[in-house]
Length: 301
Length: 288
Image 1 (tube, rainbow over the protein chains, first blue to last red):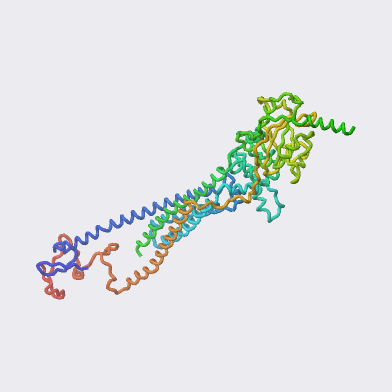
Image 2: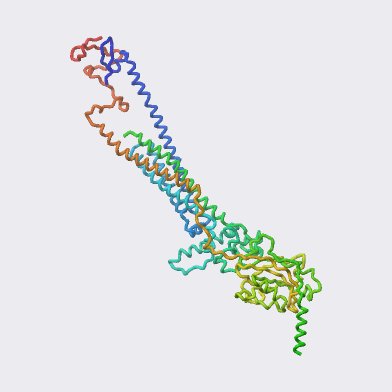
């Protein structure tokens, strides 16, 4: 490029070095100012990239935590699945399964994203953005499923299943009745286990067995079996402490409280964890994605 | 002869009349809050201790008098009151037929035990009595279950086992309604209502997902469209082809005016300024 300069009222044409003696300081300083501006752009750009990389690290950690939490819920230590399956509302398990795979996918993709942002190549970053949007959509599905199906858990739901299925006579063992047999056996065994281990009786209390018609009520007299023997206090060997007192309903010998808290507690925690933790991860991921998309538009073509 | 026999019978019956001594006690359900005191076909009543102890000059003693319970439903109360003076009262309405049809007597009698076992105050032994503990039994005076969901009244009576007549009785209890078994299919297990948490999560996440998809769409359009525009600039020969201030690959500028000079400038051999007349580079220059 040429910089024109005047000396003794005549234009002088020369190189940069020769113009020092010419006095065209303004244009030279302009040149040096441009030189100093570029490191500031670099710093801002680097800070933003570092922020995005750190955000992806957070997403990776959250993804692994989500996966671990969903594994814990799916493993169903309390044996509640059959009770929920009988009501037809077992979609919270589907939400947890989606959350499990989404958590792992978030972990892998955000590690990839950290690399993609560090390299800042257009194609790799675009691939990262597309993958994250797909995973985002699935995690939205998981969180909404868990949040929606939590509303269905009321005590009457389990009461109805208990009365209609506890000790129900099994149908013939055919391929078409396997589901019924599974439900009947599962509910009977689960309730027996709950009433013995958690020291409770019925959903609201022992009166559930007395007030409502049920297969159990048809099979047993009110005086002898007002409620199942599992509601009676048992000693360590499994023998009933005082049968007559249990039949009347004297307090320590009969478990007077209802089992609903023991059933609903783990289920509500399951739903709470999958839905709200998923929600938190997705809120964070949304802002990270907006940042990455903005960073993508700033890359040189 | 037959008339004499009839008169003697009438007299003996008349001496039986009016001999039922009423006591001022009312049977009731046990007052404690126990889960099993009332079911659909059984009741737990307080035992009749202290009921009949104040009576004297009865035809039986406390060692021989028997305490019996009379559960009655609907019209059974008045039917029993009409029947109570008849001897062999305990077999007048056997349990299996007591509630079998609309015209049956609707009461029955069941034995608790000897009066001496129910002295007051209670020292040991149960101070309650469970009506219906024998279930659906078939003997005449068994402690069978009441009809499901019926409203029953109870009365304790003292019976002389020798004559099988009632010698003393308590008052009728109040109406005690038994539970009528509800159908579990009628339990309302429907949705209680959408919680606030569900609405917050669903609405916010759906809007975030929509925004993200929109941003992605805009980005893809931006990538596809703007990429072509940038490529058009790179046409060789265009005035704007050169880039000023090429900082990535700075190359030293070579002034064509000094191309013919073989030497590089040094401190001891600096460039001498030359002046061209009338901007004409072809004419020789004068050194300044």
